[in-house]
Image 1 (cartoon, rainbow, N blue to C red):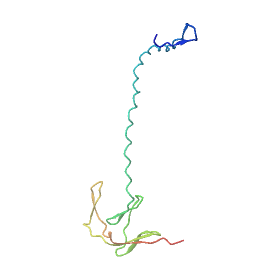
Image 2: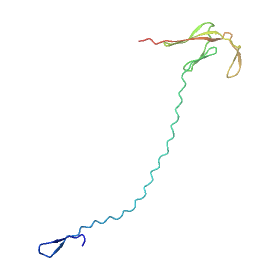
Image 3: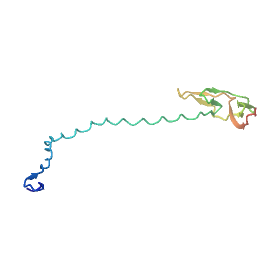
Image 4: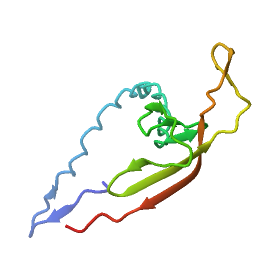
Length: 142
């Protein structure tokens, strides 16, 4: 038979067969089909975009107008009426000096209140700032 081997021994007529090769192990039964993969969990809803950054506050500003009405760097308001032809120091600090000259105000002679819209006669001795001088100084070396 194919695949068997014969051996002949001296002087005898007996035939010896070698055992057949071992048969391969039976194949395992087919595994049941695997279930379809489960869908991935739903992703969380996207987070809302961050709010836009707040605008920077405006830089501090001092305002001087009219006969003179002043608004300081911290929002404080004050008025003054000086003497015609005189110079006044509006700011005096170690690094800046601001001086102003006051002269006679030329007006229509009437003042209108913004809130009530009533008109009043202006003071005859009103003044306006007509000249401004500013000097910046270097701080002294220690």
